[in-house]
Image (tube, rainbow, N blue to C red; front, side, top):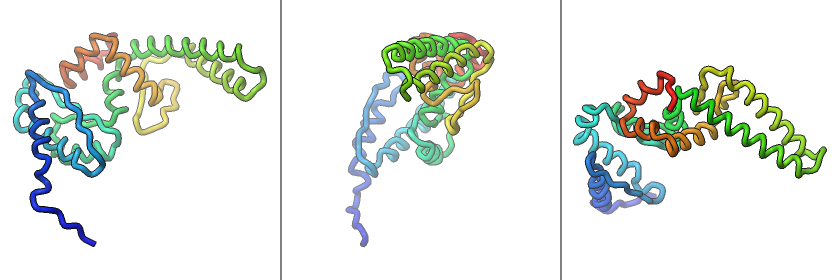
Length: 217
């Protein structure tokens, strides 16, 4: 069974694309939220917006050593957008976890401090629950195992010189961060550290060179 598509159907939402383009100013940018169902052309609208940037704003972005961040849920979506924007390096496409890691990678001192506080808080919380719980239960056994594991990790923190992470593996090494930790640390740094906010505003190339020095935020 074939579906007949009325002539001009692809242009029905052109006004939406025009409105999006109106938000893409380097001097007076505007936020926007596009909500639409599956198969409605969201990726097409995104690519059209990125193409507008590539054709009209790329020179100024390169002049200031900046790129456009595109954050996706899946690697398949990432690869599709990269392909449809013709592998243009000014469009930096990554998954959520990969982007979060790119934000904090190399800030080992800050990561260590964050983990030190987070692990200590988790251990205190587990001990409080254990004091209220029933001894000998499976829940108690699990809590004690968690306390031991987190205490051991806390004691080893100062021996780790460089934290590592991969968005595509389980990250089980002693110097590895978990997927949840990468998201929590990056969101906390972006929210609370003015230096991180400046780094993001300045653009990827500039802050790539900065964080690889291992400086503290």
